[in-house]
Structures are given as structure tokens and as C-alpha cells.
Amino acid sequence: MIFSKKKFYKDISGNSLAYFVKNDYPVLKRDKDNLIKCSLEKKKDIRICFHKDKKSKLHIMLNSLSKKKFYNPHLHKTKDEFYNIISGKLKILIVNKKNEILKKIILSKNQKFFFLRNNLLHYTIPLTTDCTFIEARCGPYDKNDTIFYKNLKKLK
Image 1 (cartoon, one colour):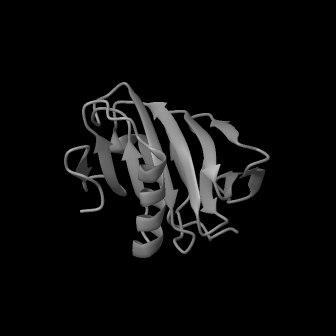
Image 2 (image 1 turned 45 degrees about the horizontal axis):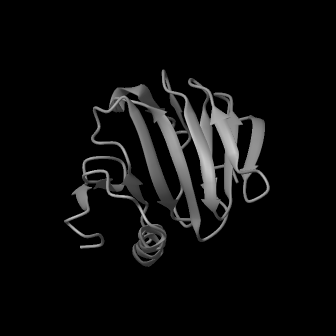
Image 3 (image 1 turned 135 degrees about the vertical axis):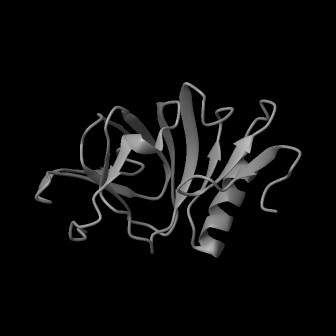
């Protein structure tokens, strides 16, 4: 077990391993550090979810991404996203359906925040081994809201 069962419950039904916070437990620096350590050791994406469950109207997650993994470009039909970088660097490429770059954003300690409107095709590319950020979006979770474009050539 990565996190205490008393404070978190594990969910493996999503796109990445998630730990939901129980009973309004405050997430501490050591929890964030543990998240990053486990993500690096397992070379997997892991997130801490602050919202109660997938049906919540607001989803706020602390994500730790693996630099070695490729993330398919995707869009969210109806959901906007907000990113707040905590550590490392994250590149967001907004592209058209021909995979031409329309906009490039690098989130880092110098540019910490970015709001991504719905229906924009984008890549999320971790640029550092440790890439940890807060992501916020409207709920409830709907797997049909996200469209993945697996046939597009990988961009860097």
C-alpha cells in the first residue's frame, strides 16, 4: 500500500492509479513527496484526488506524471481544465487535427498556471523526471467526454 488506508482509498478504474482523500484529511507535504517518489519508482502516473468521488461536480487532482511515457493527444468535448504546476516542467501543445502546432505552453516555476478551454486538441508532455501539478475540471467524470487521437504522429 502506497498510502494509508485510514486516510486514502485506492481507485484503479480510471486512466491512472488514483488515491481519493477520505474524510477531508489534509494532504500534507509528505503525501505529495510520497506521490512523487512512488510515481518515479513505479514509472507510472499516480494522482491524489481531493474530490469525494467520480460523481463530484468539481474534480481537483494532484498528478505526478512519468517523463518516459507518451501521452496521446486528446480533447475534452465539454470540460475545461486548469493546470497549476507544483514541481518540474510540463509542455502543453495545442494542435489542429492535422497535428500542426497552434500554441506551445511550458509550465514551470516561471509560468505556473494555464487554463485550457474545452474542445482543444492537445498533448501533455512532461519535460522533467518529476512533473507534478494540480489539475482542476468540472465533474462528474464521463469517459465519453475525452477523445484520444492515437493516429497522430508523436510531437516533442
